[in-house]
Image 1 (cartoon, chains in turn green, blue):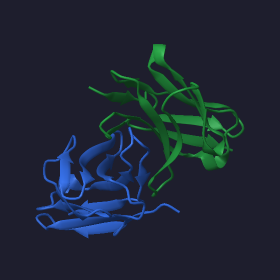
Image 2 (cartoon, chains in turn green, yellow; image 1 turned 180 degrees about the vertical axis):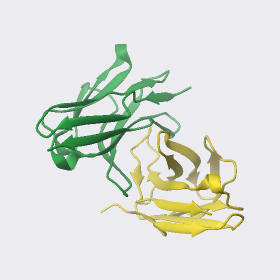
Image 3 (cartoon, chains in turn brown, yellow; image 1 turned 30 degrees about the vertical axis):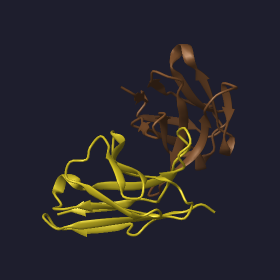
Length: 112
Length: 113
């Protein structure tokens, strides 16, 4: 069965520091992978997605993610975090039947 | 701009009441979804619909039903609300194209007393 694991529940980084949020998935075929961000009290917004091709994908707000098939991972990165990046981040995998499976989320706190 | 609109941001209901959560999208998407979001559990799929009058159960359909009479509108119904249905409910929609991305509404926070 498809599943998504985000091993870090909370992460705190200092403003200006680099960020990496981990995501591991379990899926039999070539996955469609997504990262979404949720600000407090809001719905989810797509940051980036991977369907095929180049394994390093660029997204909005300066985020990028790298698909590593051998590790079943799709980690999200940002070289320099801003205070406005504080939010909850969700990794998701989509299957060929238009269903989506989400991780449990990682809450990011940004220290001034 | 693409838009998924959920009719109520905050609701407070009593145990046993019937609850309707409405969702409308203006993007002509085929697929619509209802998710439940709880801390530490991420998003869990309740129901989804891939066409008018078509629906499929997700991972946690018990205690819920849905209705899709028009392409743009997808309703979630709690026939008899219970306290364990207190949660954030998120509606989303997508095109039918090999797991196209989801577009989300802002969510409806339901409290059942």
